Length: 292
Image (tube, rainbow, N blue to C red; front, top):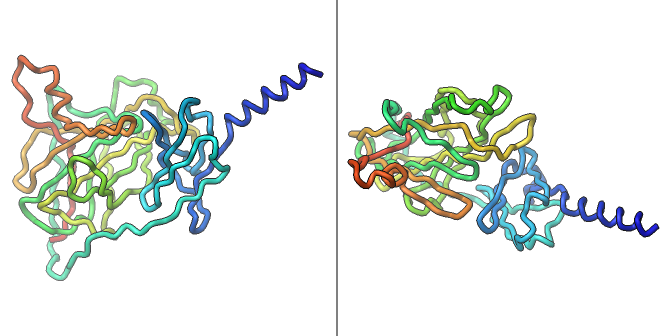
């Protein structure tokens, strides 16, 4: 009898540490897919149904934060996480724009990739590659679409045909150091390990080509296989370029959610080139369709 009691207590402990938790909207109780769960020096995303299991949270963690654009961030003590987490919707106001004189379509093509070293950047889980554009021409034009270029990673055989990188595309207003003023987040995109372009439509969103800066981020959520979000190392690689543009100035950064750091991309490449000629620039390749 005593052995049976020990087994029961052990199973109860395992179940409690493997509890399924779902994140829903407080407004209509719909699941909030790929919500961000963060804690000290770590984190992960919920799945497409907005759910996760408590065993993904390290034992030493005392509290977690749950966030998603369009909802108020919530902090919970680890030992008081309910079966269902409800997030409160908030309104994100975008800057009003006037379209009366914007009748010309302008296409700014993505820059071609570098044909020497550092042609692309490997996106890691729970990180983001952000690039900021400062308009020097077509100022205040409406941005209707952005094109993001990706390069196939031919060295990673584990990225098979049934695995997709799950990405979201973020837009930030102006700030190129903190990336806190997020004004838009796209739906999730499943990107295969191929050389391809991904077009993100902004026609219904008021985003402008601003001289004070508009920043675009590619956020890596993880790999999806059989509807399960894996934690394997990434294979998706946004293409980079080293050119200047007559239409805008550009700066690109890497943002790590684990330790909340934001580092200029060029710093990674110049770090080990102390006795060599420093690279002038390395930026994310991006194309835009404007209404001006």
